[in-house]
Length: 72
Image (cartoon, rainbow, N blue to C red; front, side, top):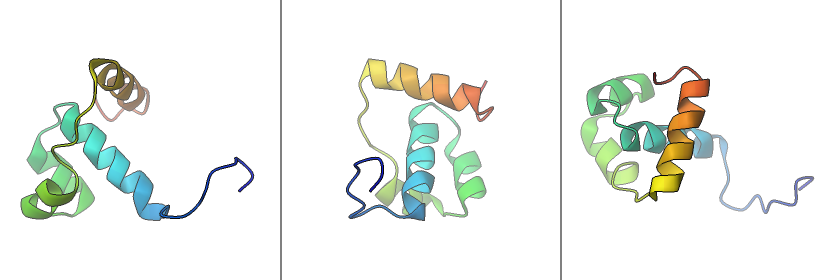
């Protein structure tokens, strides 16, 4: 609670889900993302794909993933 964030619903999986969603939205091949995350394509589709991001969000997502060397 130090950051003033309500921890309800947060877990270590939150970061993993976020990164998978961002990679899919940024155009990383689904097969690559699934292999890295250990999911089959059906699990990935049900939980992480299809999220809608604005153009500004996509620009920021790609910038962050690039800084982490996850995309070029």
